[in-house]
Length: 270
Image 1 (cartoon, rainbow, N blue to C red):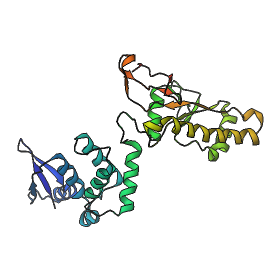
Image 2 (cartoon, rainbow, N blue to C red):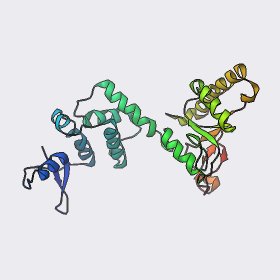
Image 3 (cartoon, helix red, strand yellow):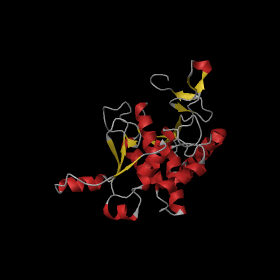
Image 4 (cartoon, rainbow, N blue to C red):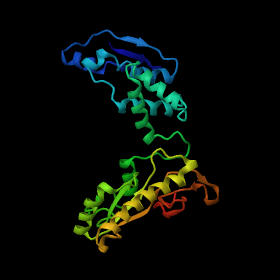
């Protein structure tokens, strides 16, 4: 099935059937049937784009929806102001509709959790995952994802990681070997997944306590030279509330402490 929408200027936008059209053109077929639809709202259009690609026929003959497709659809719905991003029930219902009811409850829940990792329900909260956190650290000239061996980076010669989990037990042996090789401390930059602005201090404290537990294990089991190889520098700023007493700049910027006080500011101070 090929479905298109007629735009205001008369052009046709393909809603589903891209693969079918491509196959037909490869076969030399230039005339084919398609269904023309009109959507009453952006919500209906965004839902239809995914639901029409979620049928058994499409899965069998084309490219099925992936979790990333559903997450992109949710982001489009939020961007079009067609859904309340703070309403978990609305988000999960939209996932189910986009799947044309083909997803099970556990599958919907799994996609919903992946979405929430990088799309906070709270206004003025920046949701992060490791790749996003690494980009921020790079922009700040800080080390990320291990030893920085590229001389073009400001953090050249340093070792750093973005961590949402303070449990470093499984990393101790690798980090000790890395320290032996580079003789540089391991700098940790924490961030919170599923951040709740009302409990952010507690969430940051819990991550710090988990990290301290791993450091204590090192002090109890390894030689003294390793006791200070791991350092929590601070937390990646995740609160974007404006501060009227600071010229309207973000309250949290760059790297902050548990209380949100700036430790390392952004290059432009914004």
